[in-house]
Amino acid sequence: MTAEIRNTPVFTRRRLLAGAGGLAAMAGATSLVGCSNGSSSATDNASVNSAVKLPTYVPYTGLKPDLPGTAQGVDNAFRNFPKDNPQSVKEKPGDGSTITGMAIIYYAVPPGPDKNSYWKGLNDRMNVDLQLQMVGNADYATKFPTVIAGNNLPDLTMMQVVANFPSLLDKQFQPLDEFLSGDAIKDYPNLANLPTASWKSTIYNGHIYGIPIPRGLVGGYNFLRADLFEEKGLPTSPKGYDELLRVCKELTDPKQRRWAFSLNTQPANLLAMINDEPNGWRENGGKLTNRYESQEYKQSVNDMITMWKAGVMHPNSFDPAQPFKNLFNAGTAAINAMDGYPGWAQYRSDNSSNPKFKLGLMEVYNRDGSKLAPWHLGSGVFGTGPFTAMKKTSDKNRVKMILRVLNYLAAPFGTEEYLYRLYGAEGVDHKTNSTGDPVLTKTGQANTVIPIRYLADAPYTLYQPGFPKDADVQHDYQATEVPTGIMNPTVGLFSNSAATVNATADKNFNDGVNDIVQGRKPFSDLDGLISTWKSAAGDAMRKEYQDQLQKNGGPK
Image 1 (spheres, rainbow, N blue to C red):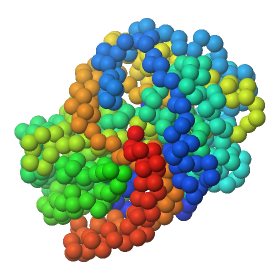
Image 2 (cartoon, helix red, strand yellow):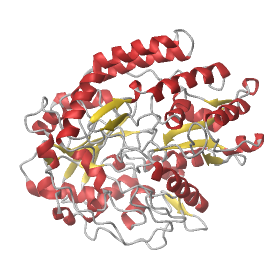
Image 3 (tube, helix red, strand yellow):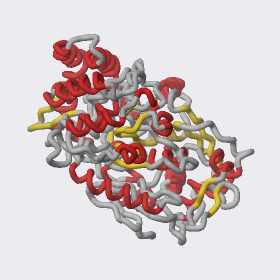
Image 4 (cartoon, helix red, strand yellow):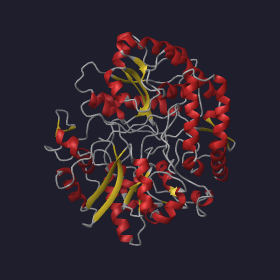
């Protein structure tokens, strides 16, 4: 399975992206996907976008999960892979033609279909020649605008939100509402199984412009090395700030090369919830307050100063290139707060030969420890590429064929198509263990990392081969935290200022906060940093978001 990293930069240096500021992790613009900005396109506005009829939701019922999900956003969970693997696509979807695509990849590029039996088998099952341009995660943000500017688009592109995004979609990409809006989506049952909320990321200019890449609303997990906590007899869910600080101090032992945190973003992510900061923005009566402007954020900065002085963060924790996953695996760091929750499977795999390794999850309590803190929910879509768009064509039959292929790739967990898509052929790419779970072989680990899940994907399902209790642990965690959750009210909205000028403004702001936390500048400088950020980007972003919220009658 493809690894995904979600570690929200709060006090970290960011890469400058000239004209391409659509990384969803940017603070103050947690999700730059969605609705309207009148300055970008004459057809992109609140009234036309709110009028779009979203696809009818038809949940897949062919398999019953061991632990059902909830309407609030808890994911379905299976303890073991289903023995019965029904077909969800009865006929080969393709017409024998070539389909080109571009998507992000987190691993070494796999062999092509001429040397990769899995890829060849996928093409045979879909009856297409799928040709993919696979771009490393470190390069995608710069590759995307280059491909757009080159005017030689593939059939399918994993999108990134950039400057004047609605206009870009209008000029170069295919509106799909004719094929997907309302009951029309029933022609593609696996796409109809995608959560309604995820489709909101695809609405611009009064049209549906793509297929969302769904992810759970929980967004991330607070991973911890439970074995290290048990060594010290420490609570894995500290009750409030004071107990968290005490636990972090007891976990830290520089002589043994061990710290509570490997990145400064990790305690910052915890403090954001402990202190009840806005989740990106806070909405009240149509008015927005950014987290940077809140008193709760100032408290978090003060707490970060205390934590830095206490030595509970790795000395290099302000380096965004810090290999935080490796340090967590090695036991150099004990807590990895708000890493992408699909990382559970990666940590299991990375530590399969370490019998002492024990993975756990930390619940977050409010500052005084009296109750659970509000959880900061995610956007419900994959952060860096919220949807897959199709280049413009006048050939409606080709649009329908490509949608059938995407419908195949979105096959639900446990189906025959899903089994092949993730695990390939039995005996070659995977073997079945004693409990009936598919386990990738070395060949499968190399062959199956083709990034098709960033073209279309099923709703995320909690499942860990060989560890049936992991489903219960994760499901219980989500069932505890998700009901407390708060959304970022700007999810589903587009700000051109966020996509153009906020990268520089945000970097300058966070560089200054880093200096304050590490004692190079006084805390009194924080008000000036906030004022500068507001002038450079924040106030413009606020106006663009507020105009949309007020015209739409508030956040949806």
